[in-house]
Length: 173
Ligand SMILES: [Zn+2]
Image (cartoon, rainbow, N blue to C red; front, side, top):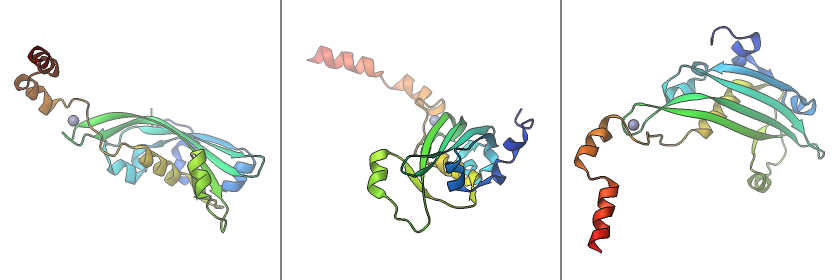
C-alpha cells in the first residue's frame, strides 16, 4: 500500500514551497511521507515502517500575517524506555506556524499568547524537515508502556496489588 501512492506522496521530500506566496494564495497540499524518509525521526523509533499523512495549508489574516498550518497523522512505534519494546503512539499534530519575514522581529510574547510557533519565511522552504520537526516536537520525552509485558507480569506475582494494600490500610485504621 505504501508503494502505490500518487505522485505527490512519494515526493514529499522534494517539495519546496515559497512560504509567503503559499500563504497569500491560501494554497493547500496533501500527501504522505514514508517514516523512513525522515532520518532523525526514524532514529528514535523502534521501527520505521509506515507513513505520516500530512496536510499543509497556507493562510493570511486581515493584518497580513502569513501562516502555514500543518496537520499530521499516523502511527509511530516508539521505544519503551523501560523494556525497549515498541510502544504504539498515534500521532495527531495540528500546528500553526507564523511566517516571519526575513529581517523582521520575532514576536515572542504574541507567540506565547496565541499558542503558535514561528518559522522564518523563505522562498524555498523544504516541507519534509518541517514535518519532521513538528513530529519530533510532539513525541513524548520518555515513552513507556503503561504496563510492560516482560518485567511487570512477573512482578505482579510477588507484589501485593494496590487494592490489597489499600484494604490492609483500611482495616488497620
Ligand atoms: Zn515497556
